[in-house]
Length: 383
Image (cartoon, rainbow, N blue to C red):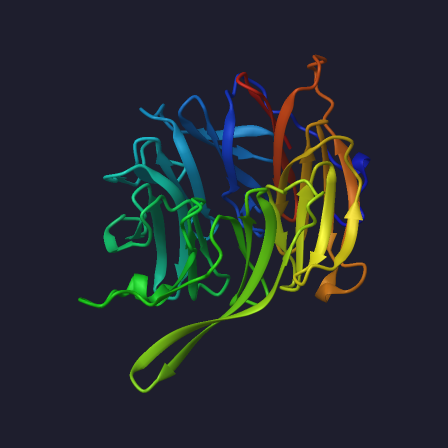
């Protein structure tokens, strides 16, 4: 993929009235096979109140759920067990195997849910759900039995992120009065009666994004807004659990922090590399900074504002309001030039109407999937 050219890709556009496609995620792992052939399978959520799965290589729908009573708001997948998890506008959580018509399990939550995270541990998988009252529920998979409930904030839990080694859970809301919290995962999975779970507040309010470093598994970088002008800042912490006698304490060491220049347009999206680099968009540009605020690279591959940024440990995808997508890849072990610009793809469909789109993309080692949505009308799924 790093050496790919636009002509190396096979474009397939899904047909039919798909509605507005919302969250999407891969249901297949990197080594998923069907009939001995490697296949990429994704889940998508539609404004038509259905969950669908797609064969990416063929561009065809494999399965579709019955129409749900309420809009599906959030989606998470567990490729290792071929399971998908949804929560709708009314707070109903469901587990799907994306083969049978009905969900494997259903749980009606008492409040509206704002975040969903799957955590695969040595003791099995668990689902974590954050709601409008600041509660975090930990549930078994696939049964959705309650394991623990913790009230983290007075406001909604908008962000839930499990660290790569599954040791930590980052939780936050975007409200200006909320300080993000980091929980020791073990305390949520095995709650001790009468004892509060071990957690630590990070002293930076107005958190809007957070990312765990894929290789430095106890390092988290937080993007926040500060001051009346809403300047954007980034702060990075290393976490440690120290056991002294029979007592465990959580410590957070601030590694670096910086504010973006006032003249820079505030980013919406961010990602991290080896733990020492932060990537984010600002207008039509993609920036790579060190965690201390030193500019490493600026990319100018889009003509119009970048509308979405997707980052994993290998790839970076940017999509723009000009109907284009750009693929980047991290250099191994953080070597110069750190981030490699690989390929620029433009959506050329049958619709010749003026471009007014919101788009987003995800990828695995074999495919790129892009959703192009015309506001308040319908979506196009491009593989």
